[in-house]
Image (cartoon, rainbow, N blue to C red):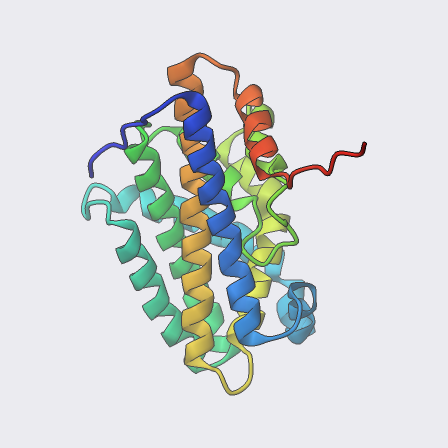
Length: 253
């Protein structure tokens, strides 16, 4: 896949990344409009037995996804973003048909597709997708907790996660981000089990999640590339991005 060539000044590039960030979060609102209700209420729809094992499920899914995504890169080439979204959407249909049991079975496969897409995006931005550091950066993207999180487009703290990645093993980081990923996956499962919608809800959920994480990966690795190319500290670029995302302040006379 062709590498992305940044254009314009660092300020121009940060503005483009801010547009990607806003686009990523908008898909969550579209999904909520489809299924109805509030994101924080979705988890209440899951049986207690499913909620109790969400964190373990998330940790296992992330570990298996990293392993499978890395192994398949030498066999199947990276795909365009739209194709990753189409594949995940099709799997969402299958997962939504049978309610919770089929959604649980489909979940690890979708997480693998998402991880594989992130590794491909890292490569587009000029990073080595086989590097353990890049794998940890992908986990940092997963820590954004999905399109149904309460993030209103101004909280980008997860993008600073790299500061805390130093010295952490991949397995150690998986354990650290698993609770946040569990929340995201729990909301996904609950949305897929919405009565009546079935397969349509499954397709919409996977479309939203795949779109979200791919856009967030572009923001994450785009900032990394910009930091390396411009020589500016990553924290400074994060502050610039945060300013782009914050609503204009009303000046008082």
